Image 1: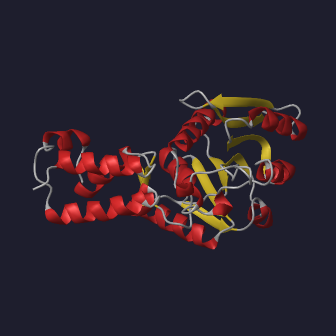
Image 2: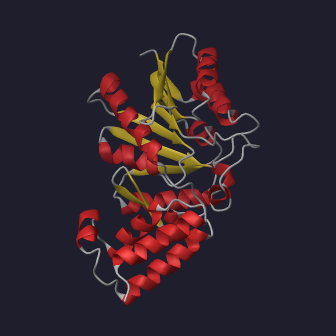
Image 3: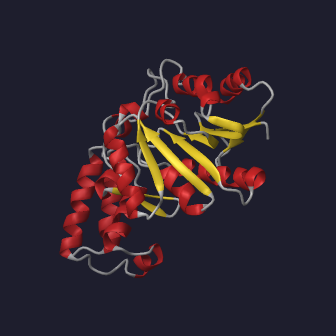
Length: 283
């Protein structure tokens, strides 16, 4: 009979041959078996139960076809919280956890201990909005998405994580403007991939294009937000964005065009790539 070691080795080889991340095999096994990594190592030579083996095999087959691990499991972990994901929302990425961490640090620097209003534009699964609300009780968070299906997923995730977040449906800043909502912190991880850029088929085939592509140069939605930000931000405000690693200087120029006196910071992610843009307006 097959041991965990044998099953995992074969699965990793299959995923590697299919051009997929072989580490996903171990993550799938850990989740399906509900094991911590160190427990799995202790049981490496134990036999894999038949029902677990069948579920694991079905998941590996799907991933061989390019389906993301999050879709196979039906969820993704983000900032220590579990989020339902499906083809209606972008799977939350680890680098976006760094955006959340930097927003919390900026809150401490600028508003420490104050109740502040946050809006999250293009919330998708609700990961950023929900993580911010869970991590800092002083943040009152309202989030929006143009996709009704995405908002439905985000509402479910908020309920599952007992997070008090308000969700609106609409295009970019329009629902906030219509509702007369103003914020101390505006956050967005908008679609920022140029429309002609080559993407892995596991992303293009399985994740919503409305959440990926940002026009010819990838900056379409940043332009929309900057052009209308004055209608939703308060006198003192932070604007925080995730961005493509090569978009920093163009976005800095765009920010300075609309907020000439603001402090603008480009922040690197843990791998050293420019990944976040922070604008401090009157702060």
